[in-house]
Amino acid sequence: MYNLRVSKQIKLKNTKKVVLVTKFFPPDFAATGQLLDELTKRLVSVYPIEFIIQTGMPSYAFKKEIKALRKTVHEKILINRSLFSKFFRDKSLLSRTLNGIIFSIEATFNLLCNLYMKYDLIIYTTEPPFLNFFAFLIHKINKKPYILIIYDLYPEIIIKNKILKKDNILIKIWNFMNKVSYSNACEIIVLSDSISKNFNKYNINVRKKINIIPSWCNHEKIIPREKSNNPLAQELGVQDTFNILYSGNQGKCHDLITLIDTAFILREIKNIRFIIIGDGVQNKTIKNLSHKYKLKNCLFLPFQEKDVLPYSLTLADLSIVSIASNSKGLVAPSKLYGHLSIAKPIAVICPRSSYLKNLVEDNQLGKWFKNGNSKGLSHFIKNLICDKNLSYKYSQNSRSYIIKNANFYDISEKYYSLIKKNL
Image 1 (cartoon, rainbow, N blue to C red):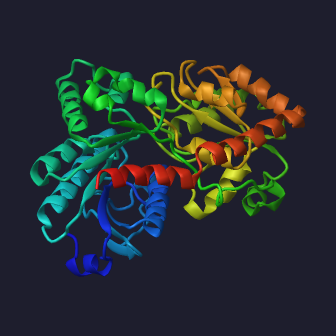
Image 2 (image 1 turned 60 degrees about the vertical axis):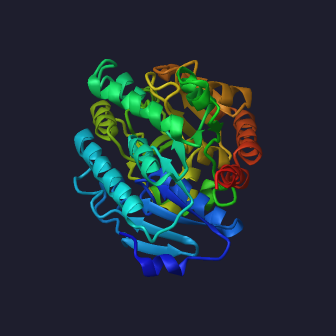
Image 3 (image 1 turned 90 degrees about the vertical axis):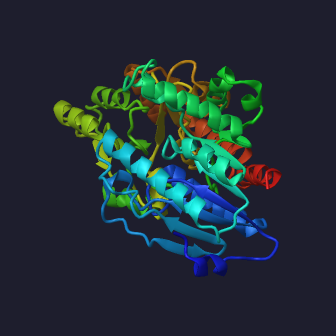
C-alpha cells in the first residue's frame, strides 16, 4: 500500500494528482518506461500536477542486479513499486504473463483500497498488455476518469504471431474486454496513424477518442557526436569502422533476421561492424546464426543504462529500425526517435504498407527495405560508405525532423492538454 506520510510530503496546493500505471519504469531498461520518466518529470516541473507512479520492480532484460526502493519521491512524483511483479523470472511467455497479471491485481488493489490517497485521473499503459481490463474494473468502482496509452495492439499481435487463433475463447474475451475498456476511457493515445486505423472496427464513440501522439526524444540530451569524441566507441574499438546499429528490444515484432543476413553478405568487408544492443526472445536466435555463419563483423551488447544512451546511439553510422512482416500496424518502435536525434541515416526494414516506409521516404531520412531484402540493404550500406554527401543529406534531414515533429517539449504539451481536458 502507499505510505500516507510519503503521500503528504508531495501534496501541494491547487495541484491535481494523476496516477500513472505501467509495469516498466526506470531503472528498468524498457524504452517506454524511460520515456514516461522524462515525460512525468517535465510535466510536474511546468504544470500544476503531481504524479503517483504505480509500477513494478525492475525486471526488464532479466537482470537481477537492477535494484530499486519500493517507495521513492522525486519532487512532485511518488513512485510506488509492486512487491510481486517479479514473482517469476521473465524468461518465458507464461512467466511474463503471470507477472503481468500479478502486477495488475496488485495495482488494482492499491488504487481501490488506499482510500486516503486522493487522485483525479488515472493513465494506463499497455505494459502489461491486458492492463486495460483492470482499468475498466477500477473505473466502475471509483468512477475516476482514465486515459489509455496504446503502445502495441493486443490481442492482434498474439494472433499474428500464431500464439493463439482468432477464434480462441481467450481471444474473444480479450476483444470484448478491449471494447468495453475503450468505450469507457475518456481518451485513447496511440503512437501512429497506422495503429489508429485498427480502431476503425470500433464504434464512432471509440474512434472519436483516438489521439495520435508519437514517441519522442529529448533532442537536447541525445545529440550528434563524432565517434572520435565518443569514449564508448574507443572502448569497443569501433571508432574507425562503419557501424550499423540496432539498439532495443529483440522481440517477435522485430525483423532481425534480415539484418543478420545482411551481415553475412558483407562479412568480407573488414571496416564494417554490425552492433546489436539489447535483449529479447530473438537474442539467442540471432546469436546462434552469427555463430553458425562465423560472422566476425557482429558485436552483441546488452541493454545500456540510460546515461550511456548518448554514447551507445552515436556509435552508429547507419541506424536500423525494423518491424516484422506480421506486425504491420500493430507496433510503433520508439527507438526511431533516438536514432533520428543523433543525425544519422535510417534504414527501415518493414512491410511496404507500414507507416515507417512513408515517414522515412517522404522526409528523406534514409531508405526503406522490404522484409528479407538483405541484398538491397547491403547495397545501401556500400553506397553510404562511398557517398559521403548522401549520408550527410540523410543525417541533416533526420535531426531536422525530430526537432520539428517529435521534440520533447511539444509532445509533453500535447499530453498535458489531454490531461487538463479530463481533470
